Image 1 (cartoon, one colour):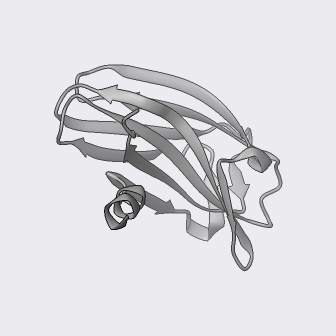
Image 2: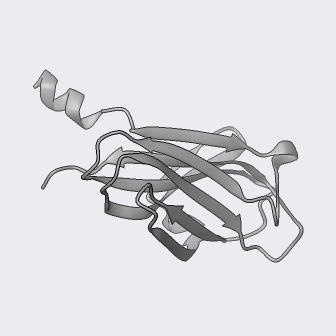
Length: 143
């Protein structure tokens, strides 16, 4: 039983949170995350996290996401995440953390460094109420 519980609560392969200065995400301030792929040929689930305050004025989060793999492959996808439909929401004192799936079981075939760039697509110079943005990479569960 202990081994089963330990497997379910494993640490992410990569987790990085970038805090926004003044709880504001400027329109052209792309957030860049780099993570190593040490074991090629494994599949991963990749998530975006967002912590926002009550000052965030929108019901969704539109972003453009670019994944550059260590093999040179580039995947570009535009997402519009509905904040009330996130995978997981955790309420804090004056904030709400949401988790959204970017890729499920994505195969990273080469050893090296992957880069994820997150671009804010809200058409204002400054978006208030965003405390932080993060990336979580988990090894995909074997089916």
